[in-house]
Length: 302
Image (cartoon, helix red, strand yellow):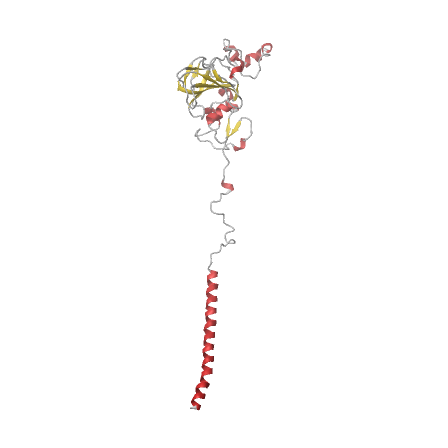
């Protein structure tokens, strides 16, 4: 009895040690296994390899070498050229520079005059080789720039060439005026003046009237624009009288002339209306080299 107990008690401590050893080994193996799994998962984490992509351009980047400059950029800032600004149209540029918008399109080699880009540079003065052709008079009574003009223009007012031939008579007028003092203006409408010229607020004068009242050409000229493509002017007519003067007739109800048509002073060119305006009126502008001037200084006294 005693012997069997001692034998049993002798085996019990050894069994405990063996169990503890096995547990310790199992725990160590589990720790190693977890460590190995953690190392592999860290190795597979998504990391951006910046070094591998250093030689590649980012997606969507534009190669500066492939960007072409806008047409005419080499002429930016030069006399006779205009850089397109936001909101510009070829019609407005023509009005602001005193030129026919079609001429600007031709001089600038525009395939589509309705497509111009901000920053694009346009030619707004005739090329040297075509300056004589472009500066031809808009009517028979305008200035004739050709050399033989003085002999054939006797019925017309004195021209710059005739003044040069007669030094004594050239004193009262500027030699380079291009006949600007010879324009005999008349009022384009008969109503009272609603608003006069204001360099900051009103680029011309507003004349009252009723719908359908006649709007007349203020001087001989040629129609360089007839339409409603210039915001704020409604149905608009622009006449070119010579190389110096343009006139604009805005807010009309009906236009009675077409582009490139010659008109005579006093000819009815439109009927008064309220297009793009708060009331029936004629907005009338005189532009000298594209710059708005006070019409009251040119029109005869009423």
